[in-house]
Length: 302
Image (cartoon, rainbow, N blue to C red):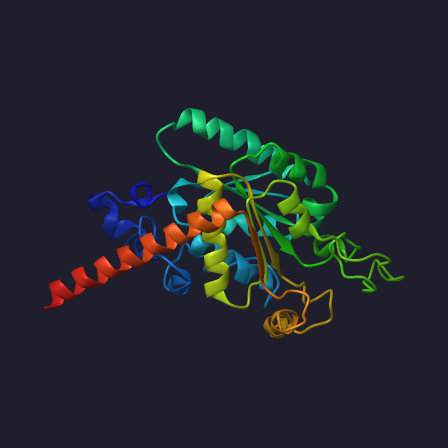
């Protein structure tokens, strides 16, 4: 999907549905300064979805869609689970893989795109739950990191198998009792962020999706690093409010409690020294670009 592809022929404009006309006029495709602040005014940032009311995963999807720097040159690779319910509503090219093999699909896709478009950067982003990432798909996941494949893996960590009734996952916290794990989990939550870093990811972030600025920054960092240096990993806590006994409006409170001082999801970033210097340069470039844009806008209004 790109702004160019969704443009209408002038002669057909008056007969196109108003929703499509609005999409074309308000789309953020091609806008370098697109952000989470465009949510609510841009139709391609998921105006509707088929997830449960109040699902934090829907929040995560919106922030991710708003954060990716080049949606017209981005391909999502999804897996079976709650995430797969959202893809029909997403205005970005996407592939639905089998349960667990999403990183293998992404590896082949990234290599093929590099051959097909040698002069154009195509971002490949894996979006999968904790079951597909750390349990059933762990081998595929880690092998892509070992091979230094240049794409980003994003895990929606709701700490159980929410899509199939509440079974225990490797990312479930120790002692948690779920509908289909009545004895409580016997071992600690798998430390996947640390494993990812040790397995070759050059940038790793672990956080909740309660603060859009943080999510946007982490996603963009991961994509930029994956383009230039190597594999990256982002773990987002998106609790399943139904399985943990919360009301539809309590997901945000759950995430805030989990990221408080001493909480399980206090934001952390792991990165190599090379990445640290690279991101400093990217930040400086962004500040300079915004400064020039602001000066240009001021000159126009003067």
